[in-house]
Length: 370
Figure 1: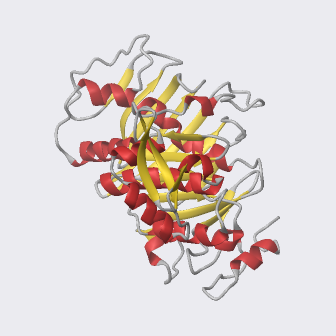
Figure 2 (figure 1 turned 135 degrees about the horizontal axis):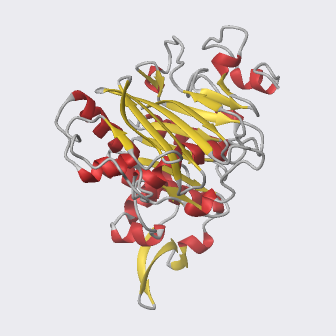
Figure 3 (figure 1 turned 30 degrees about the vertical axis):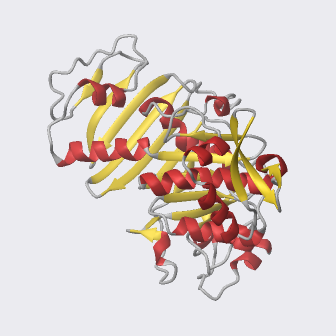
């Protein structure tokens, strides 16, 4: 699990900005939202343009060089903060797994170009390179003793180089390295706003309508919509040689994705990824930006309840305060972003928050800082 993340010099984050997920409190309700004192399910609030989307993009920046999954290149324009004088962005991650802990940090001058990389496992340096000073890496992994340490002009990530170039011996440290790589390989970011986009987990692009039909999920998708109060009779039909999804109005068929509301289309995107999560059962970290931008508040609640059942670590961003209550999550799982920091409601409150508190009302009254 991701336990802590820090970024600076990236987009709107000029100075170090820290997202702490290992500061869970001792609440005895909604215990399924926390695992081993690490926040497992979280919802982030904040005013427009404060950086909620950019925080997600910052967390997923490592996808571009640690994996070969979808990188979301179009989302990473204007990469560096305009007033950041160092000329690079810095990223620091802390993870915990059953095999141990990982601290991974790096700097980049753009989305593709690494300058510095360092990874420590169980507080011991595992590998490091500073391309600003030298093309030679320091590699302390057992089984990599004969690996060439001079990477020359290659822009490959040191982690990827180790992964692809040698077979490490089996021990706890190397197992932790493998667990870290597996976690990153199975991270997923997506959103549905003016356009759909995603980062991680897969490669390439797929049409939602085509995917539902090809996987014979028409009835399942119809049932999914009905569970959240959207009632259509759906049927896959062939029109002009192509398969399309139609809504049946007593024998009068209309192309479903042409008549569906923006909210229903957004829900179809959620269903698209839900199928992958449920089928593969290996999404490690899920970040949905503005997850309920087109949803009714009751639907937002249903989606959160559904996500709570998943084993994945889940982070959501929203402006919807109607789901800010202790029935869904708990005060240490709701975070408020400000210009200089991000804190949970529990961490930002001067009083001890209890299950009976109306935290939405307190939030609107400014109890957690303006």
